[in-house]
Amino acid sequence: MANAPSVSSVLMIVDDEASQRKLIGGFFSNAGFTIVEADSAEAMLEALAENAPDMILLDVRLPGMSGIEALPKIRERLPSIPVVLITAFADVRQAVAAVKSGADDYLSKPIDLEELKVAVYDALAIHEPDGKESRRELPDLPDDFIFESRSMRQLVETVAVVAPSDAPILIQGPSGAGKELIAQLLHQWSPRAPNPLVTTNCAGLSETLIESELFGHKKGAFTGATEDRVGLFRTASGGSLFLDEIGEMPLQMQPKLLRVLETNEVSPVGSDRTVDVDTRLIAATNRNLMEEVKAGSFREDLYYRLNVVELVLPSLSDRREDILPLAKHFARQFAKRQVRLSPQASQAILAHSWSGNVRELRNAMQRACLLCQGDVILPEHLPANVLATNDRPQPDSGRLSQVERATILATLQECEGNRTHAAKKLGISRRALIYKLREIEQVDLGSP
Image (cartoon, rainbow, N blue to C red; front, side, top):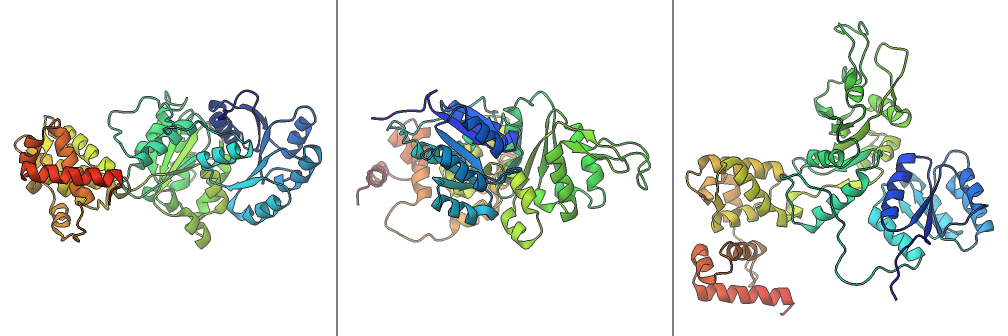
């Protein structure tokens, strides 16, 4: 019989970072758990002497006694309580050894909240009801935030969970995929929304002036410093600061950024005093920062401090269900009138790889709208490289390609199910269309 967490399921979260406790606690509180927090192993053991929770999430790196050292003391008092260790990459060997000596499981940072949920539910033998995948209610989305793919839905649901927290966030994904839109969503859905979201690109900051840009400077601190400057952190205080292309930040600046994240204080260049700031940092990169860590060009401690929860934005080619909805959105935006894509233009758009991601699609649709004088966007209105992709010979597998399948279904929907009109738009006979629809149906049903 399926059961669900209730107020009787008490989860203790042991972590020295308040933002991490708030993030994980908020996630499980929404799922029906009662949350108890501790900021050290010592505080945890003291709390256990009074009331025992149903389960413990225990960070490995803690001030004073570590999570690994605390584990045997937990087992002395509560031999059967489930304990899941939260560990950084460098601690994985220790965590594996700890599992062998008493921990129930371990998860590596950055935390995948859904993976953590599975670990908690498994440990407590909680089973969610069978049926369709549950969908988390989302706050209002901006009108220009368009998606239909499952991968984007999952990402946006995670954004909704982490947005209320003050934890730093790292958004990873290819150039042009829309990382800044995700940053805007994080800010918009947070309590900081009434205050500013300040945006800058680390690649565009001068290496000699980046410290001044971020933290400010005093008048006369260096040649050209003719007046005081507050810096981006103080400008964004009360709100959020979005640092795009964080992987481009010079190595010598990274310890200073880490210190700001740990102390919530900045030291303006030329000043011997620190200034308190209340700024939520959101960073983004198109690089693999773990590879940069291994190469010695990015600090490991800063990577884990930024990447509390993993937000990975997929490329447009990995969420092809979003291509046509986005194309139609951009067409409406740039044409400023009612226009539609011809079936052939839709097919060309679906066939293209879009290595430049959403930015490339946006530019292509802007061009198409400039060239289109009527109300139908034709293939000749699209960039030559998009048409070249469509002209490449495709291997004949004896089945409909994904592009052809999507084009047929989109055209049929546009014609409100009228097969005669859809066949005419596709340039095929009605009989041919019916044959192709039967083939689609057989594939969807798993028939050979």
